[in-house]
Length: 117
Image 1 (cartoon, rainbow, N blue to C red):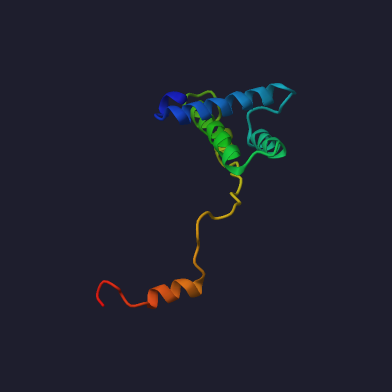
Image 2 (cartoon, rainbow, N blue to C red):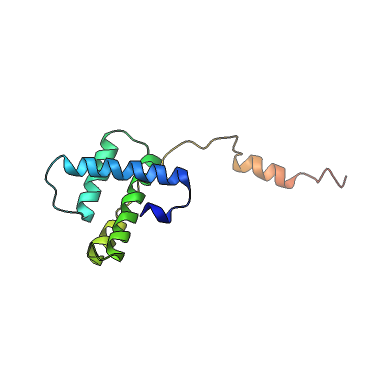
């Protein structure tokens, strides 16, 4: 599955995510490689306090694994479809930089062009 990824950084992060998933999966009996299982893992990642981006990249690696397994006849396509529909974690954060208010933006738009004056 990682052979289809060109970026070495993405490969490394996906590999880490898959290793974490398999370690979590093996800690106790699970119902199988299903949407419910991957959703439970997502919940476990959230419980560890990981950020949205960290969780989402791990979930993406598992989604790609499911698609690859289905393409190679190792996983039923309907199971892979379910896994690919596991929702990502919404990114919540603070915008970086200096953002203009609506009034400030309008003032700048209404200002005369200094290049033509």
